[in-house]
Amino acid sequence: MPEKKLTDLFYDMLKDIYFAERQILKNLPKMAKAAHSEDLKKAFLAHHDETEGQIERLQQVFENLWETSTSQNV
Image (tube, one colour):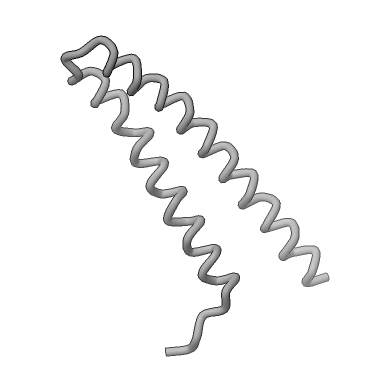
């Protein structure tokens, strides 16, 4: 098996984080609906908003990395 470069490991880690954040985003509304405490429900919904922001930032990172990698190939 060929050795992975540090950049490959970085990309893999970012993809894993992105996947996890999307899964969390998908499940937070279900968790809020199932919460018995109003405070817990509010916390889940607040976390949902924060997670959306994190996903947007990750998408920007991917776009910037893509632009950087394609500009270096020119």
